[in-house]
Length: 321
Image (cartoon, rainbow, N blue to C red; front, side):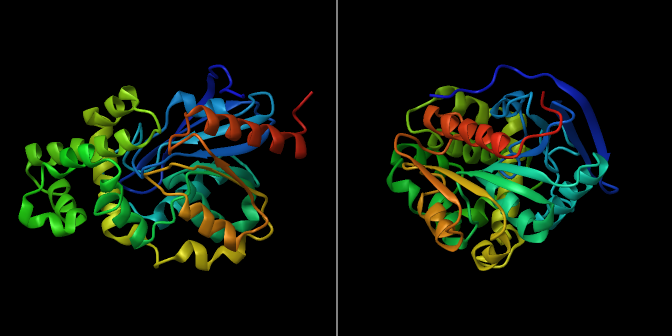
């Protein structure tokens, strides 16, 4: 079984002023002459980590990692101003142009798969290929499943902690109730809601309980950006038309695609990956029988690393020895 590559140091860091408000953190690692790949993190609002570099052979890839608006090392922290899917697609184009990259491989999971699909449907000519994990289509049914009713039946114990900040009379629309608190001026209510929202996701992300994941999601800096930005996007339908990613799937027909999805993914049920594969049947579809949602579960990591290695062999870089 494949595991992550050893720790990879970045060789360049950039801070891009993408508008009057937002400053985006971007880093490069691996081989400067390698195959360009951009790691697109989840959330939205999840931020990146050094471990994200390690899905790629550093001899084969020029690895680009960035923090989307309002999270990670990008500033201002947890900002919702000028923060939409369209803005993030435009930021990715600014990164590509700033780094003088003609086209690149897209690698994204969860919300990262959403943004990768939206970017590829907007700029298909800039995409060498796509490796997608934990497909999230951002349909109303997908958001309702995790934040209103569905996952609640699988993790009813964790669900009680998710409900706790919201009065009974507001629980018929939990997304709205959370959005109101996460965008309020009441700092105590905002932080309590952020932690409950984010920990709920962390607890449900792995097939086997992983307290370290839940603890990371509960860290105040992480939780505030994750919860505020996710609620902002989901309350506004991810700033896309309903079922947009499926309706525009024909724009992906010339792009090599690999899909990796855990059979027991509770955050983004496998039906979403199945629905996507039906409209892009040329994609390789790998169902991981003993995994949930997290990219760091052994079976999912194994398949993702195999996919990046395979892509590198199929499309060798002039920078390789």
